[in-house]
Amino acid sequence: MIPVILSGGSGTRLWPLSRTQYPKQFLPLNSDLTMLQETVSRLGDVDHVSLICNEEHRFLAAEQMRVLDQSCSIFLEPVGRNTAPAIALAAFDAVAKGKGAECLLVLAADHVIENEAEFQSVIRKAEPMASEGMLVTFGIVPQHPETGYGYIQAGEIFGTSDAFNISKFVEKPNIETAKGYLASGDFYWNSGMFMFRADRFLEELGKFRPDILEACKKSMAGTANDMDFLRVDKSAFEACPDESVDYAVMEKTESAVVIPLDAGWSDVGSWSALWEIKDKDESGNVTEGDVIALDTDSSLIMAKDRLVTTLGVSNLIVIDTPDALLVADKNHIQEVKRIVSQIKESGRNECFQHREVYRPWGKYDSIDMGERYQVKRITVKPGAKLSLQKHHHRAEHWIVVEGTASVTKGNETFLVTEDQSTYIPIGELHCLENPGKVDLELIEIQSGSYLGEDDIVRLEDKYGRA
Image (cartoon, rainbow, N blue to C red; front, side, top):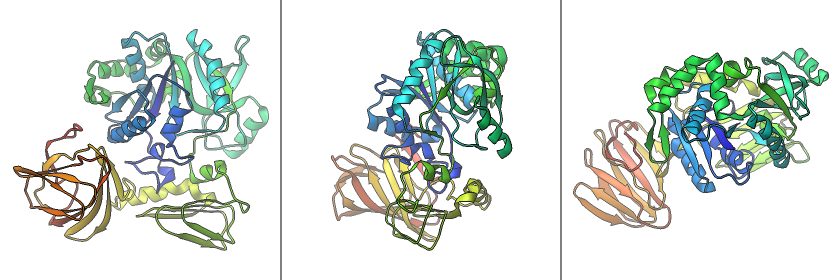
């Protein structure tokens, strides 16, 4: 069995923690592990996984797999084209490696499943059916009438198995329709999880969407290895239609079956959904970080870097980050996308990235900024190295706070230790490396007429960035 994890979402409904360049699947929302890491860990001991993610998330994904010591192939989508093309890439890869008859277990990277033993049991039930050529999907046993999910209606029992033939897929219903689905007992939430043989998926995709099949075939024909990543042909993939696997295959094939899954599943699609699955205090509150909540009930309060207090409030979502604060009534939390849209329309950056930004070499935190200056706290991992670069519009002053820096400036290379500093003039070729065994931390003070991140001319980079 080959786990295929889809990790291309942006998770805007969990703003301000989830942002375009650091979406929810890379966040530790339910435990000390990130949601992506939880997805891999609940599989148990697997030799290898296929991970499909956006180009801009590649180093986040690779680092989180490295922390788990998990062998993986990371496919980079140059553009988002939905789930059918993403799965096709993994299927073509399996066929090319002589594993076309093996089952692909397709999972989203950002789901919570509380009962891992039951999840694994249902997966084992699905594998024989998938091995025989069926396309299996997993239907979540509904706990309440939900209007935010699509549904699958089960038909007759499939043979003597625990699966059912599929009568139909239905879109997200209104509340009255959802109540009817719940009462009927034969409707399940559409989980977006699947199992099928790689060759069978491509066969069915070719029947119903040969245009997607051909575009993905061309994309894989132009695959190039880049460090730990597999880059598909960009122009071929951009020409691929945007389509979900449900629309492209599962709603059309005569070989689909659904297996019920009752394992404490949630797609954590909103802050209220996260509140529902978290342990609560005697007042029904979920608090994380430095929080004082007095006369407060039924609320989710998360503090990132400072004390957050509430008094005499109820049913609130309060999410505090270094550069943005969300306060919302829990009943309106599904409308967070409206806030994100307004931030985008006004040209602000808070929907795209955090104040703290991760890079393959470490991270930086923009702690202060003015018209002609910016102050960053930079952390460089042991053995990591920033690109050899120069700037046309800014100078930089580096002050080492902890660790030792190997600095290249012009034609010279030298060490800068704690409480020492160095100055990089405008236009000077320079590079920074951590030769030590502990994190290197330094304060960078930029000054100049333009301080944007695009004022970087890279001449050499170990991470393959342009």
